[in-house]
Image (tube, rainbow, N blue to C red; front, side, top):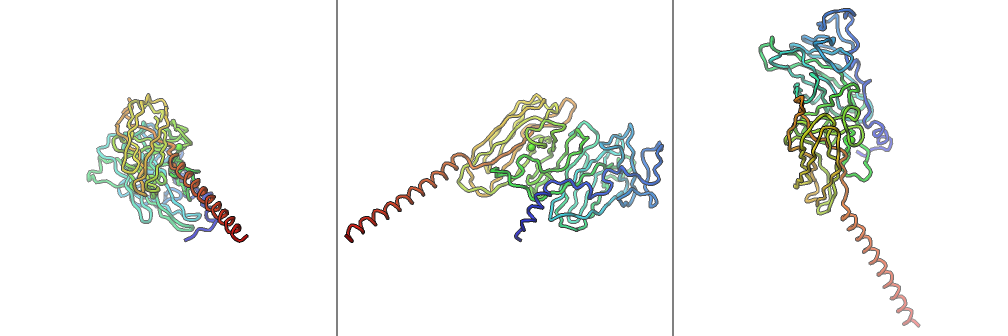
Length: 398
Ligand SMILES: [Ca+2]
């Protein structure tokens, strides 16, 4: 279907809009009616007469108030999904067809658990399970980015969170706490000047929590199209980092590859077979005390070239580039880490990749310019030949 100009303009306007107002009570700060201001208990069991505004629930669900035993990223209120616990809310998609990406936070619902139950997030046509990893940050809670789906104007989307555990002994299970939901919608990505890679600076991704120093974890995601980081697939686990709390080489966001060997990001572009291209990118460290020798493989098609950076963990960056010839038209471009590193605090960390720019190489530009010059020369020669021909004709006519 051909897009109307106004649709394109609208899409561009919609690109990366925060859609916080689509969800009611997304941070659970509006409490149930029966919450007493001076309540000493940090857990309040929800009932049919005592629900959280904006949300419906099933099973055992508790309203949580943060205290010294329960740390949360927001203003201190959240929801715990206990046995068979489920909460849901239907939002209405607004605007032309747009992609929706969710940021959310999971916290362990207790201490000394033999098992942290998982969180299952469902929307129409998609379900995904999230587990606490507890190795990629200093806090006990973790924020995640998740691609929800693509819906058109007026479509109702039922967003469901529920707990899940394989454990049969519920006494040793810690039920997950969820908090700080942010919904972001994306329209069409604008063309990035002469960069052949859209979103090469990773600016189009999940929304950041303004008060979180932890970044956002992105789990393995084989699809580049249905991805929280637009047009990049994720291998292993990476951390989406913001310039407010980390060192980011360009713009507001970058990718830190945190889960070690073979983790990274990948995209694919259609290139001219046999032509030369230049891939530029920035390799750095996030200023998160990640000390070590980073090795990153930059894959262009079937070729991989390794690059290294000695990181002192204080925020450094260097621009690198690789020139390659496209052997096939569909060309994968990826950045994979070859090292597994932890900070002194035991937090897994790694290299930062940002500002990826792919251009036709100078050689190709020169080749194209040369072709244009040759064509012009031939044209001039033809014109001159015709002109001589005319002169000869005129000579014989006389
Ligand atoms: Ca960036």
